[in-house]
Image (cartoon, rainbow, N blue to C red):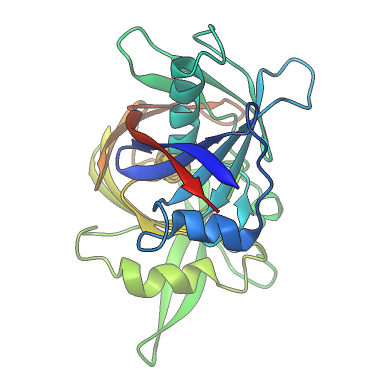
Length: 287
């Protein structure tokens, strides 16, 4: 079969976007992996699939596949690429749309300056909602947050890291580091991702606080490895920082691929993610 696609990125977090409204798309996990492979396929952190909605009141359904072939619940940078894609392709004339995802409904909006803002919904803060198994652990109070100890085996030595756990539709574990550039993301990232306390695995965030409204962030993404930016990871880091008393909204997030802006008014309120989305090229591949 031949598959038409668009290559896009949001702050360096890159995507293959597929229109499944105007072409039939039924691929296996192996085929998703092939598409995302940077040597034998197109190459991407995630593949985004645009479908007709199944819920009333929604304009589209949005499915996300990581480069390991697994389907996941949410992707903030992808949501921005999604709204730019449907606008550029003439699939909608609306500047604000409601999009059905595996994690619930999100509301991305195309701004007059070309940037895109996404209402990502309220974060889920209870450990069971993440999900995170806190049974038998002694949490450490930090402002309004609770930090949970994770024991990691690093190079034959045991190390305990303290993380905030929350869900932005997908699970996150956020730790504060002194220097994000020298943080052991490639070593401890996969250990946190697969830690047995997270039954569905987890995205591991490494946050350096530069000021009350400014952080640097690296994220080791579940099923994708470290990416140049992670939208839900940025949301999770800012929520964690505000709850710890370290940050004030809005917050500028410097990722390795660019800048994002996150605003959050507090518990029960939605997190708003703003940033760029760029179309790189279009093509067709035979599978």
